[in-house]
Image (tube, rainbow, N blue to C red; front, side):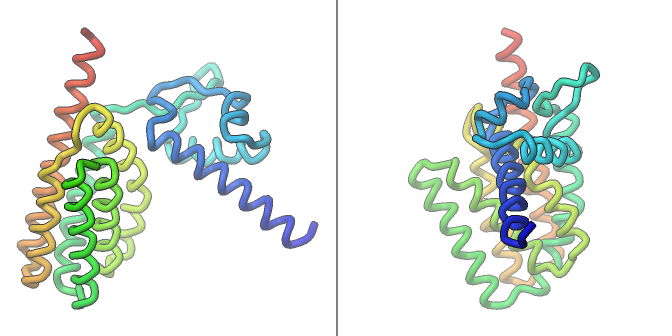
Length: 226
């Protein structure tokens, strides 16, 4: 088989994986929803081979769950997982903000300022959905400039799960608008080279975001019971 054909097959597998994962993150495939290979293949317009590989990867990443009867379902949204994700983030991202305050160059600060301004502009225009990705870019950039590569790798594994929960919460009400104000405060501490302050503000930021998400999940659960 030629190298070009191998690259095409690899792209097909990767694209199928990313498309399916994105539909789970965006809640197009609902938490706890039963899914079947036939319907997924039709939805994505792909054959079974790349789909099965994508499913296996997403099972390994806990986005899909294989039930005892062998059937597949989308991983549920749970309070327990939400708490675990944000507790780990709080521990890691506090250190990341501290290191970012030490390492940030003037160019980094300029770039992060633009990110915060984009977020604020999206909120001003009433687009909470657009503001969310900008917020994630801000966190990703802090990880990048922190120099804490192991922390960055662990957080990258949690990133899409975090995004899935944030999008789910946003579907049932506005995401925590205070969180974006806190980004400005984190940036201010970084500009001031206040390493301890940046760490504390980041930890508070993650804790506040967790509280907001937990309240929203509780509201959704109560609505379903009614």
